[in-house]
Amino acid sequence: MDFSVNQQALAYLASAVLFILGLKGLTHPATARRGNLYGMLGMLIAVVATLLGREVQSYGFIIAGLAGGAVIGSIVAMRIQMTAMPQLVAALHSFVGLAAVLVGIGTFFHKASAGLLNPVLMGEISAGVVIGAITFTGSVIAFGKLQGLLSGAPVKFTGQHLLNALIGLATIALAVHFAMTGSLWSLFLMTILALVIGVTLIIPIGGADMPVIISMLNSYSGWAAAATGFTLHNNLLIIVGALVGCSGAILSFIMCKAMNRSIINVVFGGFGSDGGSADSAGAQAAEKGVKSAAVEDAVYWMEDAGKVIIVPGYGMAVAQAQHALKEMMELLNARGVEVKFAIHPVAGRMPGHMNVLLAEADIPYDQVLEMDEINSEFPGTDVVLVVGANDVVNPAAKEDPTSPIYGMPILEAGKARQVYFLKRSMRPGYSGVDNLLFYQDNTYLVFGDAKDTIEGMNTALKGGGH
Image (cartoon, rainbow, N blue to C red; front, top):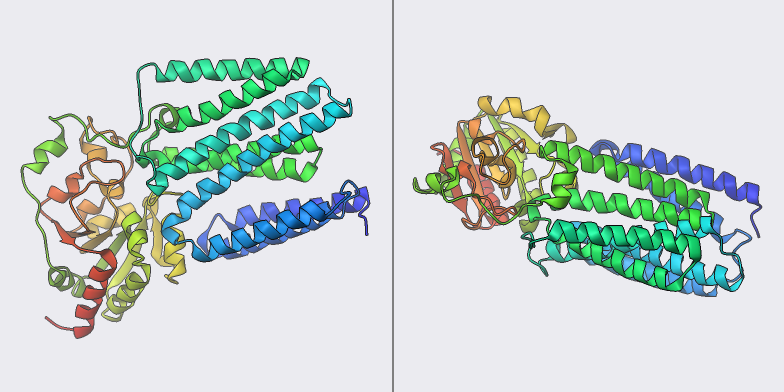
């Protein structure tokens, strides 16, 4: 059965509405599952409507591609760990970018053989190929940094910004020349330069800025998809690409605001390996030493506390400690202790990373608060338990003008009566910046695997009394 043009348009309209509802649902953890369902339903309708369209002449390669992709996607989905979700997202962005490049080049050869090239079409191809190529290699570099295959530290060299500017200008010039002439050489060189600039743009980005880069690459993938939609004259692809592009750009802006950094500063001046000058406050604080504590010390304070705030970070994700934290919350609640979770906008390595993990452990949404909602509560809190977080509670962001993270809003955990850090070692966070909170009089470090440590605390809480 072939869909008429009007039937396909109606199906696409329904899909677009579902995608918008899906995005709306994803704005809050309580409605995120529903948002995902809307998105999946919208995509199912879109795929079926496209396959039933009159422009599809053969299903052989389509079915083979769908089957192969379904098998690979299912295997990846079943095996992926939550700690690896950021790099999976980066990898998926690279697929979108590569698809845009291949569709653009394939369309060029197909239309050229039929004598149907025109400047408008070639301009659309240029946009799709350039944005797609930058998205592809940029996402590959982001994947490598997140996976540990590449150093998370910024890679910088003299004249880097000038080189990027020259490559960018050359890419634009070649894109314009290709749109005007249809030159195969312009297409080839334009693609190569776009692939190169995707690398040179992302390698200077340090680990602490990676959450912003993930959302920014998400935006790029959306614009690549929208450009491809114009090339293929597919209205739904244009709509979906624009939705993804705009939402990714807005999210990048929100996260930059949360870090008190401009998007230009992130893209062209990432940080992630240097803790500041030798005379920084971190170096001075290091001379004071660090106090360590045992599990029993932390439990002693928590079981008689009025309020405990837990600050999760990437270390919680690595240790898969969210379920143990759920049990701790229940044990403390049974003792009449109020427990809340404090989430920084850039905690973890992608937007919403901590929210997803806590939701997986069925921790109530009303006990999970964002930075702006909970910062005022720290002075009245008896114990703050920091689980694998670092940069998001580092007072250097407020006290040390020489620190790369200076100016970034933080969770003000240090204002509580007692602060306990769960850490494997004294290594700094992903940004590589020394944490001044380690050296405050009310701070203690409990060394060990986060999950094992929390389970030990739960065992002590079950034992009762002291």
